[in-house]
Amino acid sequence: MAKSEQTSGGREHVPEAMEQLLAQREYALQALIELSQALAKPRDLYGAMDGLLLTLMGQFRMSRACLWLAPAEGGIPELARSRGVEREKAETLMISCAAPLMEHFKKHGGPLTVEKLVGSEQGPVREFAARAGLLLLAPIYVHEQLIGILGLGARQDGVPRAKIDLKLLESSLAIASIAIENGRFYGQLLEKGRELRLANERLGELDRLKFEFLSNINHELRTPLAVIIASLDCLGRVEKDGSPAQEFLTYARAQAGKLLGIVEGLLHLTAAAENTNRPIASIGDIVDAVTSYHRDRLPGLSSGLHEFALVIDAQALQTCFDERHVRTILDALVDNAVKFTPAGTRIQLRVCETSERGERWARIDVEDQGPGIPPERLPKLFEPFQQLDGSMTRAAGGLGIGLALARRLAHEMGGRVAAVSEVGSGSTFSLFLPAAIQFAPKPADEAEKGREVSMSQELEMSKQENHGRTAVLRLKGRLDVKTSPLLLQKVSEIQANGQNLVLNLSEVTFMGSSGIGALLVIVEQFQEQAGLVRLASPSPAVASVIKLLNLDRFLAVDASEEKSLSEIGA
Image (tube, rainbow, N blue to C red; front, side, top):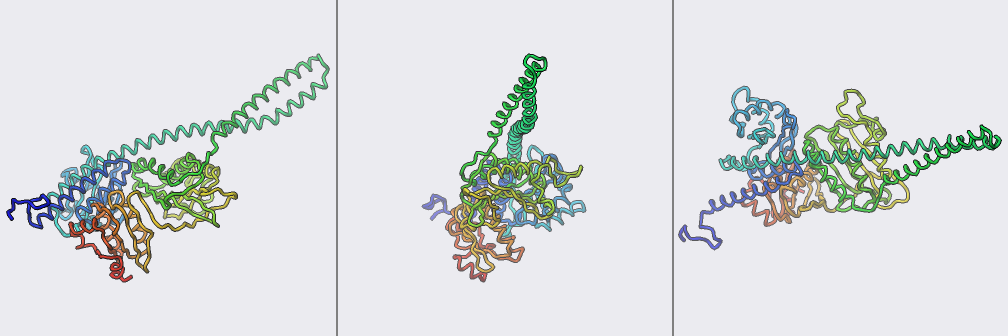
């Protein structure tokens, strides 16, 4: 057949190697399209960064990548996301080398290849980058202003970088720069709107305090007024009718009665005002309420370089609550976490179910990576006007009334708030709400119920199944920009237990470049701790990608789950 003839598929006959190269280029274009679509949504700055890193890692077959973002007020770029690189090494690299790196980018503009660095001034960059396993550092600009730095490691397949790879990298960073800047502006805008809403609510709270003050004062006024009126009535009966004293007593009695009427009127007014602030509790799905709250707070926290993660350990959880009060409580707990955690750290919002003696409770946790709280301070945390640091030089301000308000609102809904902490290991503040009508108040147990499946909108992860030191995790759905971070989060828990991993991909319907990047990160992290990872039963969608990109050269892939367990020795 002549070369000009076409195959039945409509493509000109070309050698198999060329056809595979074309398919790989087509996949690279799809990855860029997928990345641009993911970055077009500015709500989650950390989601955009994850999409950028994992897509590039999958596209170039890399297992290490880092992203640092420059603070809005200037200074050393903060580590925003690290995949496959120890956080301490990534932070040390930027702290030690920020000045020469930024000077290099200012002079030369483009990516910096670490292995080509020479001279004493650039020596530290090469040394610290090598410790982190990074070979390429690239600037991210918006309107000629440096907003971030990307670090990439070596390719797993050993293929050297081509010119088209650098073009793809530059295009991805150009898209990412706009997404990051838009994400920041969008988050700041929403956060200002939220602050205005809270300011309006505080004005309402001041009104409530005003009425509460009037109520207390009026109650105090009624007692002496009753005594005064009774005394005037007694004196009025003693004095003769028509005498001057009788006239004065009658006038005084009338004015005292008038004052009593004013006090009683104010009492009715304050009673009506108090009724407007009482919780209007109803049965509803607390998971939906917390998900909506997370969606509203996510842009603002992300723009401040705080990763705000949501973990749902219950698909649906019916509880009795007032959503307005729940949001106020969560605002107090989240704002407290933000106040005491530095930029670049993670705050996690978790919803789960817990029980005690057959009674069901919903628990909402706010976990931070702050300095922790000394044990002797925990009992007084929820008292009014309490500050962890009461000195004049304390870094975190505030009156110390947020947590006290959270406790009062929780009690009004039949729940409670609690805190656990360890100095140096962060803190967890929890809101407990009754998951069913309870006729006697009981404390909620800390134990959690097991679940069958952990779900997102597009990816399901089965409850891990243990075979000795090996954990089996089965996936169903899409492994893409949105779902890959969820997989990494789940696998990190398995790795922390010192287990090996078998990842069953038989029901994965799509695997994008970000999914490949996630798998490479998982393998890299397990290998660093002498652990093993095997991929079992790849679906046709996954198998085609593995074959197209020759991923089986550095990923352990087995035809069945039993084969993977056998290879690991489980």
